[in-house]
Image (cartoon, rainbow, N blue to C red; front, side, top):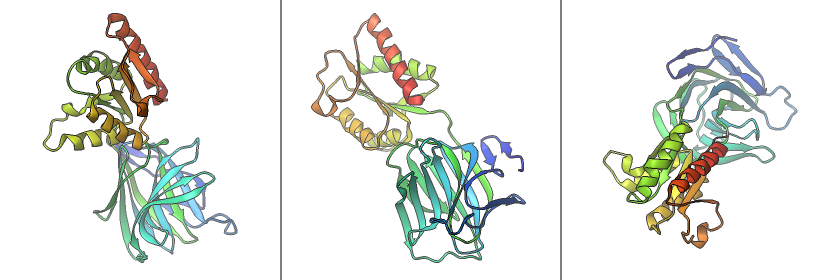
Amino acid sequence: MTKDVEKENVVHVNDFMPLEGQWKLHNNVITYSGPIDKNTPGHFGLVLFRYTLKNGSIKAKINFKERCYARLVIGYDPRTKEYYSIGIGGYNYFYIIDKFEEGKGWRALQFSGLNQIIDENRIYEVEVNLEGQKVTLIIDGVTIFNFLLPEPLNGIQTGLFAWGDGKVEFSDITIDKTEDKAKAFVIMQFSEPSKSLYEEVIINICKEMNLFVYKADEIYKPGFILNDIIWGILSSEIIIADITPENANVFYELGYAHAFNKPTILLAQRGTPLPFDVSGYRVIFYDDSIKGKREIEEQLRKHLKNIIK
């Protein structure tokens, strides 16, 4: 195997671990040449890299030597064997993103280019950008689609996927990590007492846990604040919400986070009546006192540790 060269946060990938299919490395080109046993149902190939990706991009040049499909892999989870593959070909479409689940197989999530023909005399430059739960597919510099993953990635391993009996070459494979530190987005009203809770407790505990923590009023740029809140929810790994005041905006944003299955920590001052819709969720109750501050710090620390695991 050729040793990888790493410059800043860009990794040039030349080595791999095959899981399915026939794969070879020659002159920094990784070639898939069909399944090992062509009598086995589901002719596909899968290899993994030792490099992970939470936020950033994975790129490759793809050269189809024979008829088959080729995609880039993100989110591989060695525990469940689930992953997403994004790229060229599948389900009678030219561009595709699908998800593999053990015991269920592959399920198409987004597609475009019905019945388009793959050109075997052309090298396609394929790029997949990952920002939180937003996935963007770019082919030869053209954005094909944006897709919001239905839930946060459980795994962060990367790789290559191919389907069919034909041959396809992957070259110039790079992984560009733009953000390794996990983000915690805070949903709360911007005034007191939530402001003090954020500044005196949440910020300190999140920094202790090596999390980048922020809320919408700390985003200094033009535009609609609601868009900033939605993007903050989608691009963050953890959501922390103070539901003490009966604030319609907070509950709207909390519902959005729940819709995308975000790990969410709920905080409320002791004695707060909980609406029926959230009464079944675990809530960290706190008292507005010195002892209460220590207790909520400890509880928040424990919850964050469990999520980060």
